[in-house]
Length: 187
Ligand SMILES: CC(C)(COP(=O)(O)OP(=O)(O)OC[C@H]1O[C@@H](n2cnc3c(N)ncnc32)[C@H](O)[C@@H]1OP(=O)(O)O)[C@@H](O)C(=O)NCCC(=O)NCCS
Image 1 (spheres, rainbow, N blue to C red):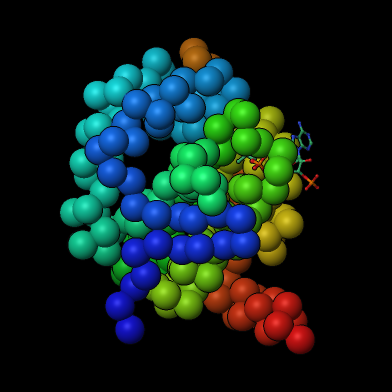
Image 2: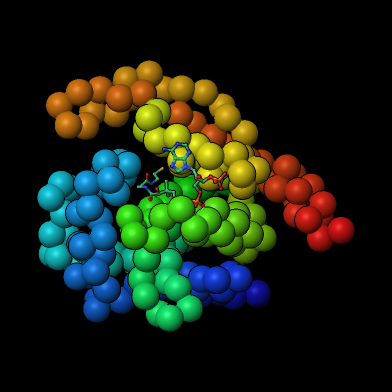
């Protein structure tokens, strides 16, 4: 079965980014509280950075390397982004996500992660999905635990950001754990 291009949830639509999204991505990512939580992005983040990033999505999806979705509300407003970067050899994927500051605290990240787990395990047939966050990012850890991930440990001093080294927390979920939870939720 072909992979879905868009993932609907109860309140959101996860869909491919297009060039026209670059300006709003730049605005959302440049909010200090959003930029602070994202590993590996340029700060400040420009419209051109966003255009280059969006321009890579199509090829990454075609090669099976990475699947990136814009997180949008039913109104069509873009509020965030999410991705799974696949390691085909090991059958695992790294999940990433961010939600713009104004839309945080509504459960959108949790809803997004739920859709991405279904996509990763049922669509891509991955064996494992993991996610990492900066140790101070309590909200991100909460999203992962609420979504069924298990805490796997701390990578000490793993990320160099803003002139210092930061600890990274690692969470993971295996396919069988997801399937067991999925069946429980259906009952
Ligand atoms: C982390 C992030 C994705 C959360 O998005 P969100 O849509 O607000 O998340 P949700 O509403 O689904 O859930 C957040 C949970 O964390 C809780 N929370 C938020 N801030 C918190 C804090 N400072 N301390 C403790 N809990 C906090 C919320 O109350 C909620 O838990 P609850 O449902 O039990 O009440 C968002 O803040 C974000 O994008 N931040 C910047 C980028 C980032 O950190 N990305 C993740 C990188 S791994």
